[in-house]
Amino acid sequence: MEMEASAAEGAAAAAARTLRWAGRAGHLGGFPRAAVIAAVGAVAKAYASLLNTTTVHNADALLHLVSSRPSGTPLLTVSNHMSTMDDPLMWGFKGFPTTDAKLQRWVLTAEDICFRNVFMSYIFRLGKCVPITRGAGIYQDHMNEALEVLSTGDWLHSFPEGKIAQDDQPIRRLKWGTASLIVRAPVTPIVLPIVHSGFEKVMPEKSFFGRRPPVPLWNKEIHVIVGEPMEFDLPSLKQAARIVSQDSSFERKGWPSIMPDGLDEVAQRWLYQKMSDKIQSVMETLRKRLLDLKQH
Image 1 (tube, helix red, strand yellow):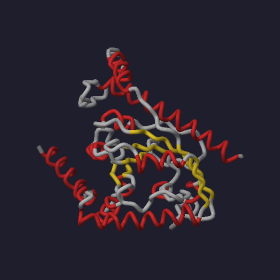
Image 2 (cartoon, rainbow, N blue to C red):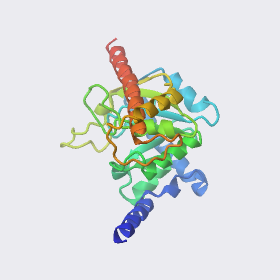
Image 3 (cartoon, rainbow, N blue to C red):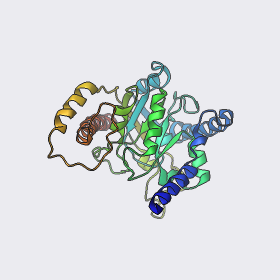
């Protein structure tokens, strides 16, 4: 009983700290959200379009899906993670509606970094951020928040590598949370891959006395490449997953059987891995293409 009470108290404390109510569109008439996004968007514009040189390849693919995709169809963008300032600076390029609160993305953010106290929680909630608890798994309550974003047809951005990597190396193995969102969303989202470079120079991890600089740096070159929407044949993938699940040699870790299609843990794990591998492969192809474009 004491453990249950402690868990309940912990959940209540987390809910109080993450201030979910502040992320609602109607909070105080939407004015605080509009103000925060306009201010952050202006900073992003300044750094991406004025203080640094930003080149975006295939920007129209992103612009079209952000502003003109079919009503009720969610958009899920995925990108590599080079610095703490990737978002919002990557949306600050010329022609992008960075300061429009209605069109601006929701983004998955690390709870231990962005939601450390009530003030930070309030600002990041207004900035359309969804906290993710590291190590809590893909079925944590915050992931259900992300699903709600997709269920309303909104745009959600994810960094599926799960952490920052500032070395120019191949895309790392992806976490399964992004794949689980694609599978579990009531309406399958449009999945758009994006790869960028240069933010590791704008906000290096260890350049200022071994720490990040107090503000983003300038006079750097930023490159962004937008891919094409990815397609997943979910019915076929789920059927293949059911066949794999009959193999009892797969390790089970006690995942909940909450899939509407009745997929057990083994099927879920196989499905998420298969989809994550595909996204990783597409992102790596984009990374190599971006390297070629930078050299010409």
